[in-house]
Image 1 (cartoon, rainbow, N blue to C red):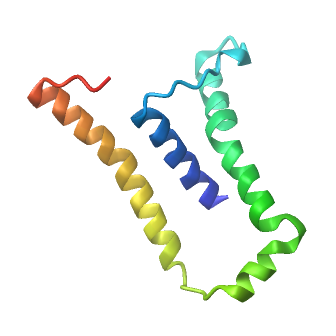
Image 2 (cartoon, rainbow, N blue to C red):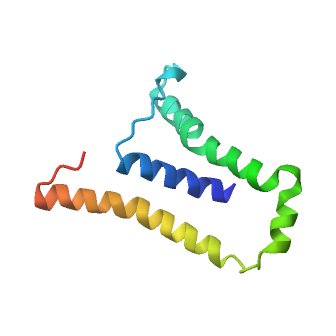
Length: 107
């Protein structure tokens, strides 16, 4: 579940960087906050969650992966988390600073 959250942020970063608009208007919920939250889960969170399930946990593939790979005590997950969030928020910080101080319109 944790890795799926990081994957969702990476997917959202890529769609924002490459200006890909994913339509969530098909939900038709009257409350816009619920529509946005549900749209985030359907478009960004569930695809990595399903992909991770079928690639790692389906038919006990986890046991085979665990035997083949060395355990690093969470260091790889930490760096993946760090890089994911630094890139996600770093992109927005650079875009904000470029727009404020240089007059460059990113979006």
